[in-house]
Length: 318
Image (cartoon, rainbow, N blue to C red; front, side):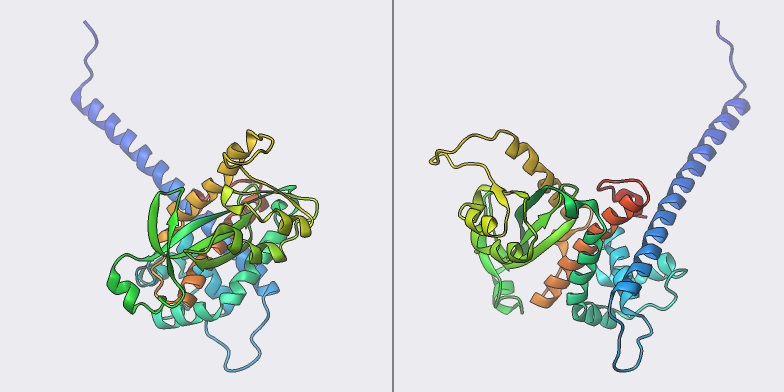
């Protein structure tokens, strides 16, 4: 017959284990909080040095680098709505940014900082090893902007949005599509927004014009058929899966390698709520997509900076 422990001993042991578990959980949460604080501090210092200063008008209480850092924190913590985020931001970011904008100022100023978002993403990309990679990845993903007929009629985005079909998702949708060019780890190097009915071949022309493709191999989808000449004119080589009607040498590793950019889109949609953007104007859509790409670029850059390379965003979601 085994030894029976007194009930008070068993209860005290259970309470000790529960206390240890709560302590470990709180330590992990505090560590994630410090990770986000460190990222925002480094990002602010970088943007404050790289972004052009404000020259005209009264100085803003919240500077442009501070506003971009607040937007990055919103995306990394997974709060899609601006109203909900600005209620939570004072408790989470008050020790870093004691002055926060109102909801109207936040929305208006972020839309005005659309070009600065692209510049900030470019600066982060220049500091990441993906800029020197011999392989680049490109693909498109849907950006639905409405579901009902009334939305299509009344929305301010109706003038630029269109109805398109996503073969990879087997669905029709109304809105735009995001064309993204990244490195192997997912660092955004170029991107563009086009109506949903734009072909991949036509939509990829503008992002590829400014990309530095000299001596690089670009991996794309079947939809990029016909862009081989444009990529070759930029000094690169396009590899894509073949259609059944084409007679081309088989490259079995293309499909496997292309899954890398699918995982990037999964990160944007899952952790950074890309499809839950909530934009109602074209400027708002461009700003909210740019904010999510800036958050992704900042996390990749900071991970590389601290010796934790890879697309690990869960360290900053608290």
